[in-house]
Amino acid sequence: MKKTERIIYSKWIFLVILLSAWALISLNFIFTLPKLDFFTHDFEGHVHYTKLIYELKKLPHPNQGWQTYQPPAYYIINQIFSPLSENHVLMVRLLSIFYGAVFLVCCHIVMKHWGIPQLIQLLILIYFMSIPAFVHLFTTYNNDSLVMALSAAIIAALVKYYFSPKPYLLVLLFLLTALGVYTKHNIILLITSIGILLSGAFLVRAIPLKKIVIILLPLVLGILMIIPYLRFHNFHNTGIYLVQNIKSDACPSWNIGKQVGLARFFFTPPAITNGEYKYPYAFDENFGAFAPKNIIGLNAIIYLP
Image: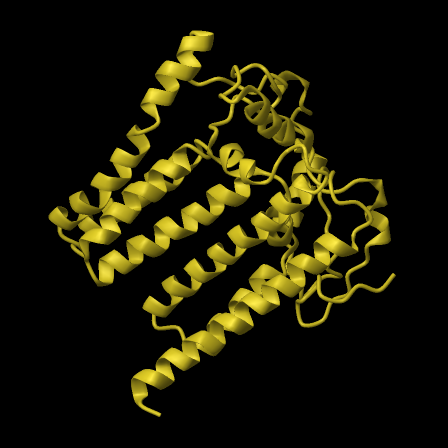
């Protein structure tokens, strides 16, 4: 077998193992829990937004529902599964698993360019995908799953362009950023962070100014694509550009106990703790029936009642 063929073969074996592990973890998580729906505090608002678009055949008023202040891309994509179908929620949650797979592959691309060996990559990513926050994010009905996948894709395309500058990657950066800002506005924080990082690299003379401008241009243009939506949808209907959640006043105020619980949920290493998914809003009262056991960090693979 030639060297090139061995590299390609090794790459495909790596991806098969990586994605199979993710499928095992995520599908087990979905199908072993007693209910399939209420695993996020704003679940009903997201589903309602999708149904409104389906029924109205247009974007709803920004204040017509709990989540209708959000940009529409995620909910438009969800139309591929009829909101009137009894399997709609399940199918969208399976789509979230796909977004998780995109995220993992993009992480692989970044680490490959860093020269990290495949075995180390695999151990890192399997450990990472077994952390409760990751499983929760990419198995629930929420627009965070899509925006996180797009964010990872932006970083991967950025790294690829840095090492191998090709014009199509700039086009890809523009498209990913535009879709991202139409999914959730907080992707602007990612673009801002990239700008700060590149500025720091310029100050230490690690990257020329011309290359920074070329990289930032499609990112900035992608962000600016949200302006027509803000003007002709948000401002036209409400008189303001950035509409807030109509239930924000009803949401729980800052609570130290809940914030600590949230921090533990995101930063608890599964190989060290008992691996239970602790988060104030993540699951309903039936969650107690789900007791994942901790095997080398794969805390969602084995279900023992």
